[in-house]
Each structure stands twice: as C-alpha cells, then as structure tokens.
Image 1 (tube, rainbow, N blue to C red):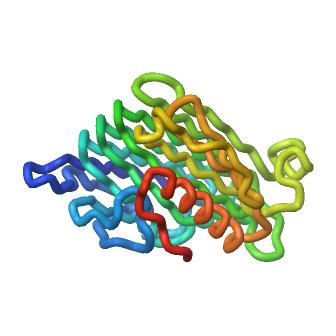
Image 2: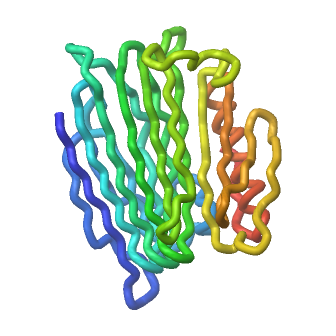
Length: 265
C-alpha cells in the first residue's frame, strides 16, 4: 500500500495559526483535533493548530510505502500527535515497509510533535527516515518511542534515521538499528535487556546564551547539542517507564526558561 499525506500551516492576520493544507490517504490519515494532554512550549495556546495522525487501516505492513510532508509556516504553531500507537507488522513476502517524513519549520515557528509509541512486532522489517529543516528562531519538540515487540515476543528489525538542520546548518544526524537485522543490537553497548527506547530533540532559541546543562535523570541522558538544542536519550524496561523518563526530562527542560511544565501522565 502507498499513502501520501501533506500538512501545512500559516499565521493568520489575527495571530492564530490556520491549517492551509490538509491532504491525506488511508492509512496515513490527518484529522484536525483539540488539545490532547500536556502541550509543552505552547501553554495550550488557543491560537495553535492541532492535528492528529489517525491510522485508518492496519499498517505499516511489509511492502507499504508512506510519505508525510509537514510545513509549519513562519510564525505559526503546530501541535502534531497520533491517535494511537503504531504497530509495525510483517508482510507476506518479507518486504521492507518505509515511512519518509519531511518537515519544514519556518522562521519563528513552533512544532510540537509528540507521536505515540511505535511497536516492532515479530517479523517486521521497517525503515523510518525523518528530515527536519528549521528556520532562524524556530522551536521544535520531537519525540520518538520504540517498543521492541509485543508482550513476550521478540521484535522485528527497525532502522530509524533522524536528520535535523537549523538555519541551513547540520544539528543532529542520528541512526538507530535494532532487531535481527542489526548486529549486536541487544548487547550492553546498545540496549542490553531493555525493550523500550526513546528520545527527545528540543530546539529553543531562548537557550542561545544559557543552554541546559548535561545531566543524568535515571535511565535518561540530557545532552546539549551544538546549537540552542538538547537531545534526550532514554532506555527503559517497558512503555510506561519510558514515558515517565521522557516526561521527567521534558518537564526539567521546560522549567529552564519558564515554559509551562507538562503534567505527569
């Protein structure tokens, strides 16, 4: 199955964000929505646009090919979430499923992207490629959570590649490969016996002069990047513990510049 989805926002004359483009194909379906849980860096801004990705069919299944394009116009604010977790499933012929996501965040714009976990079911083969281009003064919160298999099963193979550029300069280029297709993925140098992996990328121009300090928060590491940005990496035994680790880190970062701190989930 092939699916394409395009989402674009623009700042209206009244200061509110309007959704200028909303086009999608099943199962990659986009829906306008209302606030869903904590919204760090927006303070439940009434003028922000809110969109959820709704899986309107099973997938991705081996052989599926998805493309998502997001353009957050200059000065606008978008909160992007998922309706539910994504389950990666094997196809009948052992083929690779792919999701390519291209994101443009304009000057002074804000993207808060908090998807639900991705679950790598036994036998799946999946690759995710995310490219983010940030304009001058743009803000970004991007979360990724990967669960290795359902309860009691061994995971399939997943490759996640994230590239972020800020004002035309590379900020982060990170790739993670886990599962039977990746040598040594379950060794102590990668994830060991943990089965939940998560990360946060937070970019805030307010940190230009005083970036957050590196820190260890339990099983999460807060790592400043070469820009007004931070990478948080976390390992956990299960989805709930992982979510709490990432929430704790995000609350700490939100407090560094007086942003609204998210409530615990």
